[in-house]
Image (cartoon, rainbow, N blue to C red; front, side, top):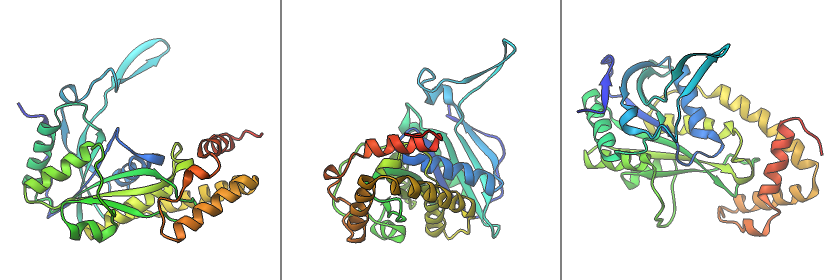
Length: 286
């Protein structure tokens, strides 16, 4: 029994596969918003669906029940989908979207690779975002996890050796490597004090980095516009508090010195600033 059903085989030529499966680290909803933007901006159509009864724990990821005047009119179930679209120059691109599976990761990644081989996928690019001691006044750096050193350096890099818990994105990367296919995970950095809110700059950076990794032309202008608006609002908030200004200056100095591990423990509380930012964005005052 397979975990997926093909809806319609698309006519595609060596498409890249962009992946954003919600449930693992996604600070500022960077990957989720990037994928939502890609689904609409590439005019994507459904290629295949995966069996979420086999892959998801519905007690943890419950369907949405629609009530109209007390009448249950139906449920919307979480869906894992493979979709096909085109970039601004008409190049093919595939999108794997939905919630991260709760179980059967090995079977799931095998079938993702099978579909990729059938569709002639040339590279997989999983997307993610993580909180970091970086200021919102800087773009943040793109980190990568890849199947080769050359790929890791194409759009970003991670220095040193790390052992970290893996999301299904990492399992997909390794499954691609085992099949002789390249994969590069792209990670955006989000200021730790803004990681619990939508942070569109991370989404814009992910779209741009994916385009660079795959040789695509993708429109990220709406995300950059939203990022500029949020930047102005964060600037206003930080400027109103001398402690926050000092914190920002220290983060900027660490970033500019290429010291991503600047001693955030010595800075004013990121949780305090995050709380005030959330109140600010809700329109509340002190």
